[in-house]
Length: 335
Image (cartoon, rainbow, N blue to C red):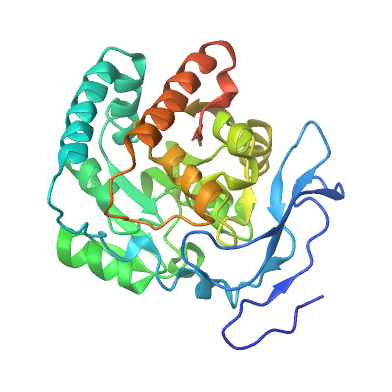
């Protein structure tokens, strides 16, 4: 059933059963709003009760025709510029604390892990032709280009594509991946970074990537982890829930199901940790203020910074014992 809404609202339809296994969903959170960009509507999240699946999804789910309304002020349109501010004593303390914090990170496995993540795990592969699906403002492609890859991007947001072309000088194809209809076996590697949770048909997306990958080509998918420590700690205030843009939120098992059904034979999934405490700070904002402003220029309070940093290090410790608790899922699948 489609909601009857005003022109400015986002129409949605009922989605009671699991996209992957057909199991009837049960309510996880009810009445969530857009805490990042202020798009209209209230949204429920449902979870699959099948323990071998554990997919989470929006119910009601925005219609394809209306989902663009949730991206009018999305951050991929360009860099958010922070306002310059006079530094007082607190600013100086936080700046110095940040230096100490970064020095501490260098002594942990997190520093080396995030370095690999920033390169999207491409540094150990022989450079070839690379496609970034949903490339946004092109920052990731710039790093891949520096590694020797011949890079191209796909994007449906014309403002983000224009930014990537004009600022970074990148080749960006405007349109959906299906509409672009690349020839079979075109790319040596494909990156799908924080895109799969935004699409109505995740398996269809992975199938199209499979078609345009060369034999033995690598697909890398990055997406929030619904079983992360951050979600367990903040629950409905977790930043990465991001209703109504995140239509699906995956566990390791549900993401593996998607990759298998798309045809991939070699599938490896692990979790990654946040290099900065930003996701915890943003979740704190939502918990306290009901929203988080992207690109907010104000520094957090000293207490909040210490709390968020502590949560980050606690997650690092926990993952030694429970590998699935990292904030981000990483999938590498080979055709």
